[in-house]
Image (cartoon, rainbow over all chains, first blue to last red; front, side, top):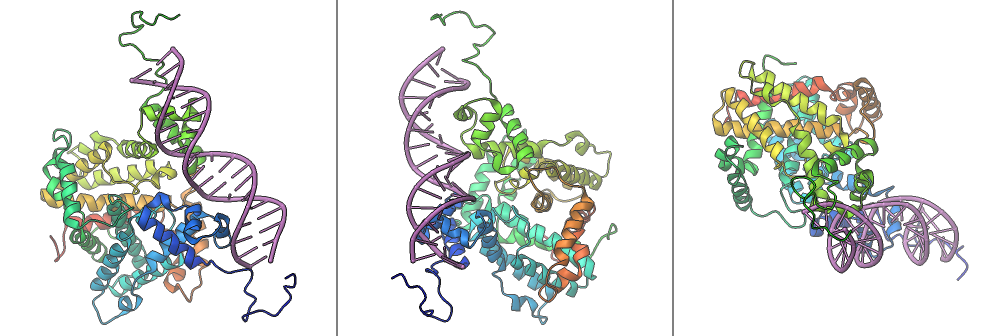
Length: 235
Length: 235
DNA sequence: ACCTGAACACCGTTCAAGT
DNA sequence: ACCTGAACACCGTTCAAGT
């Protein structure tokens, strides 16, 4: 019992147990986020989910913020890199695919979307996303340094729109169908005092309908228009 | 001593004490946010700042989230409404003023900026901001419902850019000068492995410089260009 | 190296009570 | 109506220890 000098069972000595890993922890955090909302994602909650003592997680992450940053970065990274690099397809189509794909995946985890713009976008997957956007915009004819500025503007629009849309969702449960969300918004805006917010009340139907794929795409196209064919104030 | 039947001291009976108010609570929260960062803003912390028991705040706000929502909405509302409505000045100039002013004020409270896109923008001041943007864009020649969509895109860009920029700041202390922030970014990007992030590393200087008024304005102009003169895919 | 038990210094919120 | 004391059910993180 006292001899731990014996040869390693596998190639490397397995250490005491090796139950956990970064992946397993992040996966548990995401599960918690989706099932019980943002405030259920605690170190203690994740540990309980994994059947482990809370402080076990500190072997893999320095603090809770690091877990969340890693989680967000992984979600950002889940896109089809090959399709984006396929030079045979028009660049605008590929930007659409990137942006819409990102929106779909992030809205599937509304709790995570709230964390999107709360920390610097400096994770490895976020940087890769930037690389791909820069390359796409360079293909579209922009000079390298303009492409970089333009890529940042695009990221701001894409992530900002997703975050703002996700803010209306209940993070504890999957997003209701678009039609339902629009109806709820319409009711809210129509109830506003028309004397104070005349345009908002009058345009309630229009504003209510901003949520959704179609409008996300419309805004994306307008931003791309502005970036690709700079106006008189151009850089 | 036992008779509390006497006539009210002032016009309305003052109640037991009336120490607190919504304004005082929000102001204390903001002070805490600026001086000691986001995580110092707790119900208990605010109460201590005000010399009051923690649960006293529940007379004025239903929960902590409501305090933060009100705080953000107030910050959004601090702009010069008259200057924006001044029809004598070009609309683009007024949009700039609105956006840049918002950026300056929100970056002065980096901790608050992180909360910007975490909750729906449905506070009274946020709605007023929307009204003003819609009016400006209608002046710029957009149809009413297009102006509403365009206004939303603008808000997404403006708030998204501010949030992303604020995410790099230490919320516990005032923002360092722009040059210093750019230098710190440049060092970070230049240190990236060039084989994995070729464009990011090569463009480190450019990316580092994205932060700042000039670039915020450049992006704003590009977005406006796209919105005001819709391209072939226009709505 | 990896995990546990126990503890520290906190949280938000609720309840019953005092004025 | 407005505020307090006390309590409940939590937090994130650290430390010393076991293997």
